[in-house]
Each structure stands twice: as structure tokens, then as C-alpha cells.
Image (cartoon, chains in turn cyan, green):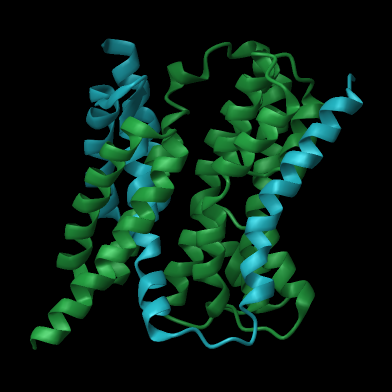
Amino acid sequence: MEIRPELIALFLACGLVTWIPRVLPFLVLHGLTLPRLVTEWLSFIPVCLLGALFFQNLLIAQDEAFPTVSMLHVFAALPTMAVAIFSKSLSWTVVTGVITMAFLRLYL
Amino acid sequence: MSSAFQAGVRACLPTVLGYIGIGFSAGIVGRASGLSPLEVGFMSVFIYAGAAQFIITSLLLLNSPASAIILTTFIVNLRHLLMSLTLAPHVETRHLRDRLGTGTLLTDESFAVAMNTAQKEKLSPSFMHGLNLTAYFSWIVATVLGALVGSWFPDPERFGLDFALTAMFIGLLYLQFEGERSRIALNSCLLLIVLLLLYITMRYFSPEVAVLCATLGGASIGVVITRWKSARN
């Protein structure tokens, strides 16, 4: 099977620049007590980041213009959200999302 | 195997389905772009980041220079800095290798699962390793499998597999909301602000940079609102 050394080198470099932001806080923050303002700020990161990642999946970036909304993704997101709320199960949520999207792509 | 490690593995299981769906698609796309299954495997082992791997594959197809690919990967994955910053104070350990290990295998999903668990209990390194290693293993297997059988499924989007990622974000976001019942109103308000910030910043920056800006802005406004409310009371 083919392995191109220059590709592996590229992946290693990409891995390195991914790794540094991942581990840096674990090295620097150890033993430090963060000021309350900072911990308060950090406490909002999970909801804001997950929200931003979710919304980014519903938007389509445009050149030199505001993004547009992908109605396909919005329609697939609605039943997925309903299942997330009622089942409180991540697995069912993912299964519902994938099946809904497959259906929408088949019939739209 | 410690019970904390097993608890970590169990906590990861609900997200495994998502990793398999996305990883499988990533493998198929990689193969379709001319990467061998082994190369796809190395990519997952070294980089281990879903969105970035899709982007790297498409840049390779466009013959982008290595420097551009590395810079793009850095920007796309910079959000890990925020997650790592948020998570690090919750992981209790004196050992350097535990901290390095926990940070090295951090993903959007393992971050969300860990923060959800942190609402109930302190996070032990064994728990984090169980969670992270299960995710890492699932991702590598799924991407290589996708690359191996890729030629049978020329179009993974037809099966809705690409939406596994969005669906996982929906589920993880809901669980985070559930765990922060005391501030549901504030969180809902912040979500609207994040959406607005994302919409505006996507006009001027790449989607990945826009996600960072919207998150930073949203969290800052969250602090301002809390401080303003407590000052009034």
C-alpha cells in the first residue's frame, strides 16, 4: 500500500500545530488559581462554543457577503432537536439526524 | 483497568456512533481524493481532528502549498485552546503525563462529555483517559474502514452521514443546557447572541475564525450580563 513520505511529514506538521493549543493550557495552568472573572468567563465557553459549531453547520459561507441559511440542514435539525430533548440520548439524536438527512436528500 | 477508566469508556460510548459516522465519511472522502487507507490512518493518528481532516483533504486535492495547509490546520484547530483552557482546571492530577495525555486527545465531543460530567463530579485522569482513548480508537478505525470500503460508497452524503456531526453538536449542546438548569434563560439569550455574532463575523472571516470570535464574544457577554445582574440585586 502506498505511503508518500512527504504526505506523512505534512501530517506530522499539521499534528504538531494541532497539538500545541491542545496541551498548552494543561501545562501552563497547572497549580495556578484563576481569578474569578476568568473562571466565570470559562464557564460560558461550552454552551457558546457548541452553539457556534452547531450554527456554523446550518450556515453556508459566501464570498464577500453574509452567509446564507441551508434550509436542508435546518429541516434536518428540527426532528434531531426534538429527539435530543425527549430522549436525552446522544445515540438516538445522532441516528435520527443521519436518517432524517438521508430521507431529505432522497426526496428533495 | 480502574473503574474510573471504565466509567470514561462508558461515557464515551454515546458519542462513538457520531465518530463512526463522521470518521467513515472522512475515510471515504480521503480515499476519493487519492489518499491510500494507510495514509488516511496516519492522518487520523497524527492529527485526530474531524473538521481539519476534511479541510486538509480538500486542500491536498487543490494542490495547495504545505505552508497554507499547516496554517489552515492551525486556525481550524485553535478552538482546542479554548476547550483545553476550560477543561484543565477540572482535571485533578499532579502527573505531567496525565495532563499531557488528556490535552493531546481532546476533541469537541470529549470536551463536551467531560464538561457534562464535571457538573456532577471531579474529573480523574483515568476517567479522561478512558473517554479519550475510546474516542481516539473509534476515530482511527472508522476513518481507515471508510478508506478501505470507500469505493463502494462514492457519495457518503447521500446516506446523511455528514449530518452525524451536526446531530452530535445538537445532542451535546442540549446535554450542556440540561446540566446548567439554573441559567437556562441566560444560556438561551447567549445562544442568540452567538448566532448573531457568527452571522456577522462569517461575512468577514473564514467559518472557523468566525466560530472562535462568536464563542469569545458570547462568553464575554455572558460575564457582562451576570455582573450587571448581580450589581443590580
